[in-house]
Image 1 (spheres, rainbow, N blue to C red):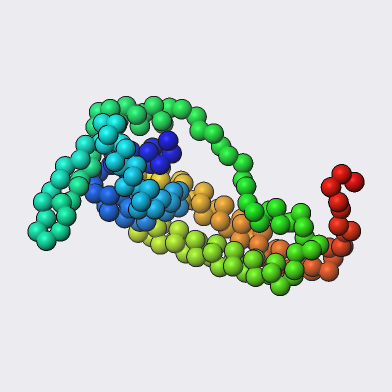
Image 2 (cartoon, rainbow, N blue to C red; image 1 turned 120 degrees about the vertical axis):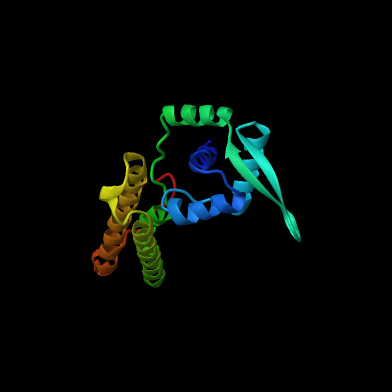
Length: 189
């Protein structure tokens, strides 16, 4: 239901084409949700079939018709139901964490590369968050409560990413020789 909920939130603010929805994801929701264009179009089609959105086709010259999606009353009810239900908060799962259980055999060069790559990704994410903040929230004191609410998710994303970055930098600066090699264990012993 999460992609459907995110699409309903997006279309509640303003009708749009699948392309418009994807651009809103990139511009304002990238810090909370990622979906491929195939996922978005597939879900919009399912939502249209379920009467959660209506689709108006607009003829274009030398191009396929443009489909503009807007939320229906049933879609608004579905959105309210989704907003009213508590979410299952999944635990943090990362293959990176699993690698820590094999630290003693994890090649140092591979480990270093893993952390450097993650550091770059986190720095890029922080830069993206800064761009979003500048574009959308440059004057937070002028925002209404509804306009300010997405800022809170951005701030959480910034804090979590910063925390990850600090943690990665600590791992990169930890003398690896301090970790004692442990004998490999066999199952059942």
